[in-house]
Image 1 (cartoon, rainbow over the protein chains, first blue to last red):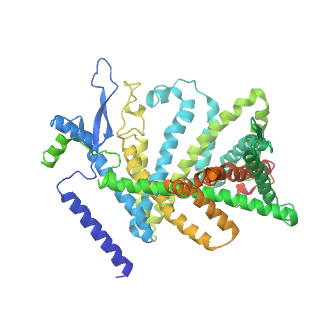
Image 2 (tube, each protein chain N blue to C red; image 1 turned 180 degrees about the horizontal axis):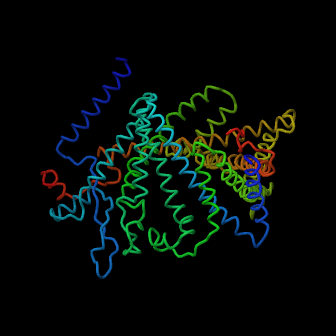
Image 3 (tube, chains in turn orange, brown; image 1 turned 135 degrees about the vertical axis):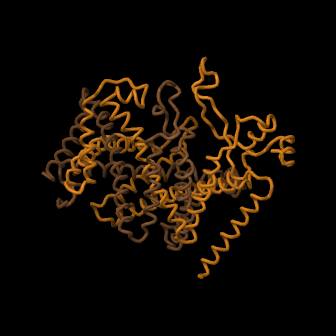
Length: 322
Length: 233
């Protein structure tokens, strides 16, 4: 057995022993999720609601409800959400295992993610776009009766165009005649070019130039504002230096070369800031995942006081009644 | 036929939208075509899903190396798709209580699709992105070893920006007198963002806009036809 394999096996065994130990410790409940029953579509005939939904609540709320009335069922343990928390924790650990190198556990998690995300975006596209914007336009009566009761529209046959192009697009999956899929693709590219050409020129090109036309000598009510002037000068000349660096029609030599070099420095500072923000974002995500593992799953920490209960409830808990 | 018609479709669609922008009665065309564009993009998701299914099923049936992972992908795909399209566990729309469960929200809390999103999709994607925290740190280390002005500027800025957003950073330079107020790290990071990052981003955005306009015109005028492929397919 390789040294790394032995090490990881040892880590896994220790982690499993820790988990079993925590579960058998007597306090119980770790990784458990609780829900509150929420009445839906309440009216005079149905004061309790026509049907009931659920929403996640903190464990403390469940314990308080149990302390007040042990027979209550309005706040209860949720098997589906509990299994979900455990699954999410295992997925998190499976992905983090990649830090030790590529391994089958990570590959399983990755395969699940590929399948789930492809289907997720298909479902979102179907319910958010195809149903209201295509089927709802072509046969509003049917769609209203089926899935969108609030839909009020007349049939719009111009939507036969995207439907036809869509069918042609799916033709790419057919074994023969895949070239016909170029027609809708050409439409997508043409539309994208037409829309973006105008919007980029209007929103980015012109507005950025407009925002850069600022006074280089700033005067305020107290007279000459030195630092504001320095900021404006640096901003305008920094931008111009970057643009000189982007301009490849002349050789970057002499004064142009020096200006382009200054442009590179400004760009490096820009990328450095973006890099800093990226690092911060990723570390924040990692902290959220670790918080999930230690708070939601293992109940080792409680930063939001989600499991803090009053003395009486705690007493019942410690006596094993709750 | 295989290349001329697609070029004409792209060119006509693009120029009509550009002209419509300047013609008052045709201003709404852009909006309508944007919806068509969204519809085609949603159908492209179906194409992507179909392609994924086709490739992975071929891998499973041919028992290629790693076929078991493909089987897992197909199973996860099928389960999520069925749960979402069938709105498993959904309740009717509360505004229209007499309607069927099909009128309910497919992402409503308690549905199977919501459960998959909450407990599989979110933790998996968030953790994969979180992994990058480790890899960007090693990338920073490698960049630092380059020991040139550009690398020093990049990492120095990143360092100031990171410290400027933390209590430790604020504490480190809190001893500076009021006359050097601007050199305190939190003010330094604000000034970097206001001056240099604004300048760099403006230049990048102007460059992107010019590049997009140039490429769009090349495509619409038929100078660039690479999007049509080789012509043999």
